[in-house]
Length: 112
Image (cartoon, rainbow, N blue to C red; front, side, top):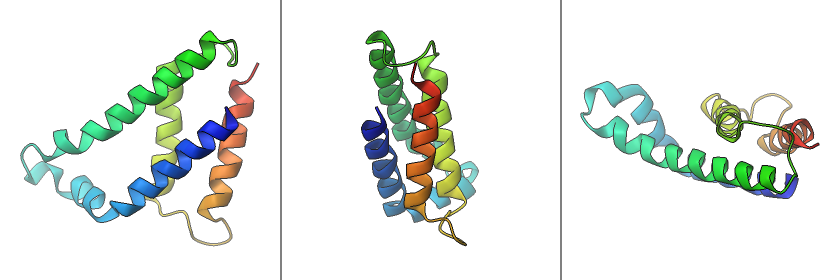
């Protein structure tokens, strides 16, 4: 599971950083652009659904503690979005260090 979540987290940040300008516009100007918010929420919702399904399958295989998959998916996404929104690469913490440490902690917390 740790390998999967590392890949998911790295891919998430790659996509988010590639689209940083559009995402920041959507956050700041969504109220002024009718329909824009709905379109920009489509992909995060798909991502949460994919991650929820992943956690459901892993729980079904007995590889996770007793969890609510959707809440864990939201938690994982929220953690990564927070880092993206705050542009973590400041000071002594790199994005890669954050990804490794947070995935390790997340995995440890969910593994029986």
